[in-house]
Picture (cartoon, rainbow, N blue to C red):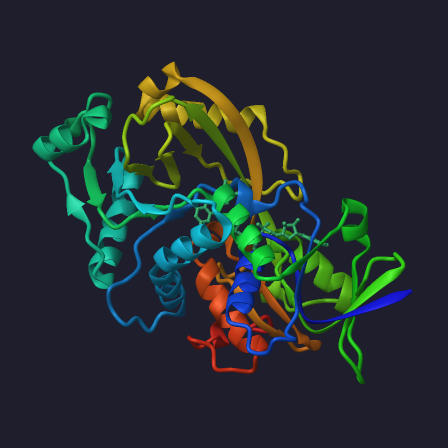
Length: 386
Ligand SMILES: Cc1cc2nc3c(=O)[nH]c(=O)nc-3n(C[C@H](O)[C@H](O)[C@H](O)COP(=O)(O)OP(=O)(O)OC[C@H]3O[C@@H](n4cnc5c(N)ncnc54)[C@H](O)[C@@H]3O)c2cc1C
């Protein structure tokens, strides 16, 4: 059995795991600090499947930890995107494209009123649109949804997006350039993965092969698979530390040239234009365990949404349909912190619908914890044992 020793081992190569690896690599404290990412590229991994919408953060000094996480992430995103492009040669297409929020039904109206109050409190610009501005500024939308058929429309100029598969590829490549190792695991190896704490030395990670890894500290960033691993390794976990998958399906159209540039939001559904004319339609929400295949029902729901909102989109070719598993937690807050049962293991999971937008903030916090430094925000509410 060959035993490999490293400083930091990151289990899971999604937006969270790679962001932690990148933050550690670009701020190495010692030349001998070594970082390895273990990933199995499991079907249903969320970060590749998401839409990459980045809502604006509060302009104020918020005391709400979720808002702080959002602000930390959003403020660092332009710099990270530039750095990643320079290091990797891959453009993640981060840009502030703005968003519109449309309410047609009374339920959508009520939730948009609530959202507006939230924007006001956070100092986020949300501009009500009447017929003139709707028709002039958003003609492609207005031709299909006349203003008089909507109860309310708001424009949020600060909404941004990134192309998440490219962001992941850029993070991974930049990490490689900065000397981060990758250990790819098969699905079978991932199923056998075992982390053992030791009273006298660092924890050991193994999967029944002829190698094992001793890292001074590990990070568990395995998205929806986190609780299954924790239960296997340490028995029952706290109820609130539980993470479970919520499946989301997405459609991709190819309009070949850009038709519009602003994200179109209705309730929890959205239409996101990429810079090259591809258009995402998302997303469904369903508890289906670890079944990550797209379904006919999901496809119909999304097509119906397009039919009822922007039916002209149906003239273009539907090029892809996929599903991903969002890592949800019981109290809808991410889990970021050391595990009582194994203090050399930090959990970073449960980001549900916001893992792309909160990934940098999470990485800054986890990197500080790993180095026994003060994290940039108070993590008590995110503790696994809460
Ligand atoms: C349809 C959809 C739309 C979304 N839209 C947005 C959006 O617009 N904005 C936003 O911020 N968020 C969005 N999200 C949510 C976001 O994608 C997630 O919150 C985020 O990607 C979670 O990242 P993660 O790294 O925790 O998990 P994942 O991306 O799932 O990564 C976990 C990784 O761990 C690996 N792994 C698991 N078990 C093992 C094991 N035993 N051994 C080795 N590796 C293992 C997996 O292979 C995977 O690569 C969306 C999600 C979906 C599904």
